[in-house]
Image 1 (cartoon, one colour):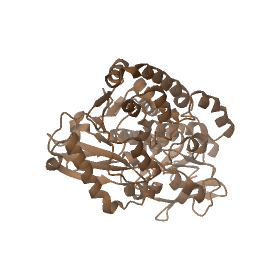
Image 2 (tube, rainbow, N blue to C red):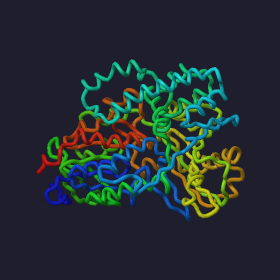
Image 3 (cartoon, rainbow, N blue to C red):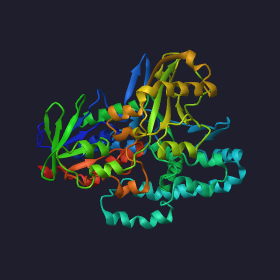
Image 4 (cartoon, rainbow, N blue to C red):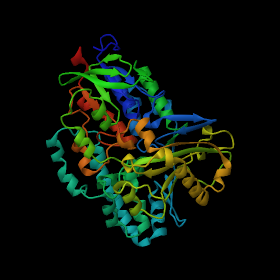
Length: 501
């Protein structure tokens, strides 16, 4: 029994307080475990960390909620409702997509409005749109409803899913699938870019991710008032209510073990925390590369981790302005002049291109509380290669930020430079040093077919008994719904706490 466990309770230690770690703490606490979460940063959230500067509040990571029910389940486990702690506001449209030529596609949950938008670009693709929406729903029913919360540590179970994979075209890529339904180049972009939201290349990611179109339409896209940090704060409150503990400014040096069984963690300061089970919400590659101590990995060996393909990284610029840009929508995607070529530069060539596509987030369009009166808060995100590109971000960071600023001035934020009041950035190097993500990858392992499901690091570790993984680097993958679902899998694979008493 752990030295931090409550009397007569089995003890679970969780490494990291990202959404996966917090969800794991809630689920295990509700099952009767005494829970201790170890967080190396000064506050919870992981990628969903909140930064407050100069009167502005910035979400550093996720900005939308696409499957509210995954949060509903956590609050229900504690006898509460999400609305007790967080106000979720539906977005309509979900986001706007601005092409390099100035055309705008308003992506909506209203099927009739979507048909109008498709016809605005190419009426000949309307039939293809209707068929694509049906395909998206069919994939959703299998890939999300049936499989997202199922553990894939059994090869026979994995093989049993193969017929559906073939029937639904999951062995093909998102982009190739979308091209079967749309002839217009712009519409092919609109309906294929979604894998980028979870670190995937539309040109190589399994077509199963076409399910996102149905997921968004079924449940909507929501904004959490106060920012995503309000959800983090609410989850921390649930953990507190269950008697769990979160320790900040504490870094795990290694997972301790006896034979093939995890026994707790050792902190960088030398403190030993014993546990009956250990759950890692750290980057899965980091877990197996750095946290096994002197134990040699059996499946996830250094060579295997080195050969693995990692997701893209991100360059994120956070800034505030003393002017409100009222004609800029809450969620805006600004596409550059290239699509396929840019994706090849990012994922294949690992080349930092001079052009870029951007996601601009203006939460103050909905929530004025995030900035001083009369001001706007923004973050703009650019997908970039991870650190295997060799880019020295200490040298290139300001040049790249300035190029983004100029692009925004030319398109949707005129005279931006004159109105800046606060500014800071996050580079791929920060993903490596701050979030301990191998290669500075923003989403862990790239979600290709042969790095998904059984081929991904398992939720029930292959390396140690009583070690479990949650978060973007395990099944079902990155994105808030996937990360929260990874913690639900603990209900299937983590032992009942009574077996330790």
